[in-house]
View 1 (cartoon, rainbow, N blue to C red):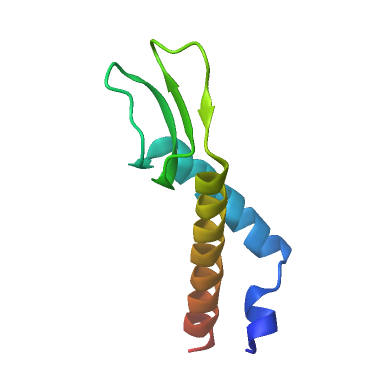
View 2: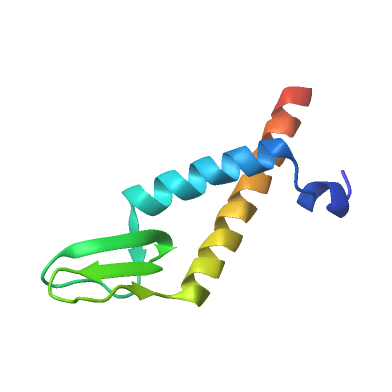
Length: 89
């Protein structure tokens, strides 16, 4: 498998990425700003959306969101690569 095929976007990678990104971003909270008084924090490994109970505005961090997308796409392609290796054996 060459590097172009490794990074090539296909339906399996898209579906697995959506599943991983969606589940882990909603279920786990990552590093970054947190709410002392409680609230909603979305993003893993880095929080990219924050809505504290005492604030009226939401905080969305674009760079953290991009880092999360790159991280979960890398996890996706590594998982699919390992699956292909195991399946060949």
